[in-house]
Image (cartoon, rainbow, N blue to C red; front, side):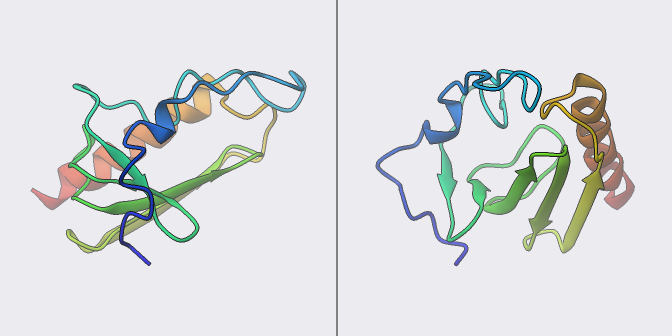
Length: 112
């Protein structure tokens, strides 16, 4: 389940997503930006951060997002998981996205 199912598409999550219905979603240049653009993958129902993320994620961390700005991640390498549920539209709200990254970073900073 946590194995990359699409290793031949390492930039899958970097495909821009246009705002087909602007009242539902903002355009997204990529789903989980990472410095240096390391490969990303797809498990059996979630994205995989193959290499460690900027927030401190371990390798092969599973994550996904929902249309109402809800985000979760599960890092089996470091033994942590988390969820942010914004429950607002449109998807990709900058305030919620910033909160997600800040919360995740705070969790990993707390592990040090």
